[in-house]
Amino acid sequence: MKQSLYIYNSGDLKRKDNTLRFTNYEGEKRDVPIERISDIYVMSEMSFNTAFLNYISKYGISIHFFNYYNYYTGSYYPKDALLAGGLLVKQAEYYSDYEKRLQLAKKFLQAAAENIYRNLRYYNGRGKDVESQMKEIDRLRNTLSNAETIEMLMGIEGNIRQHYYAAWNAIVNQEINFNKRVMHPPDNMINSLISFVNSLIYAKTLSEVYHTQLNPTISYLHEPGARRFSLCLDISEIFKPLIGDRLIFSLLNKRQITEDSFTKELNFLHLKQDASKLIATELEKRLRTTIMHKGLGRKVSYQYLIRLEAYKLVKHLLGEKEYEGFTIWW
Image (cartoon, rainbow, N blue to C red; front, top):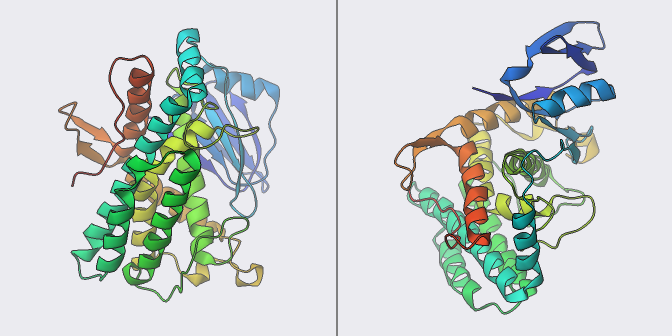
């Protein structure tokens, strides 16, 4: 089974026969067979050449880059191997037709809101009093279908998340004093943690979309823009509650991540390397978790659920089956 490769403290990355060789700043070498790698996450400064990029492109391997503050800075995306001009035309058509775009945007947010609600219901049933937030979110998500514009949808989504994040103080068994989501830049350890985990899920979604015929720059909920794969933002909204938030709750409640995991002198913007590695390791474990898929009648991993979501969108765009966003049923 292929796995994601996370690189820390590597000074050089190059091809050696059918393996990738990493050489760190102390001169230590590590070889990894190319067949075992699904995508690469570079978490430190690293040098490589075009021959290396050509080599990994043959295997359809994407590289995702993060800076010193664990902030996602961009991806190397190999040449599309599954080009489909007809689907590209359909993708653009569904964006250009505002009503079609709005209906898809609603589907993404309705699924995301359902998964948020399920998270709260899960913890409410385990002694965490989040009943008031559940009621407000339930009320708000029922208004999504009546939204007449993308802006109205985003406004409702913002209110849903405001109530959702207010419940985190009850869910998390640490004094976090979490009041609101701040991203640019994060202003406390919880916001830094959310930003890092969400960026990993966004990058993972990009890796999965690459293996479909979808163009990752044409989106419906988020406005397409320069220098971002906005369709991955759409799809990852659905999976952040299931994969990202539940991971964060687990890490915090087990005290695997605390204030000591961050550099306090940098206002908790910088996640220490050991903590970053732990989060990446735990995320990969979660992505390999399998569930019995109701539609397919077989077990699939959380990671493969992301690719299935992209396939469902393809069928919708081609008029084969109306899209319904993935929702937690357990």
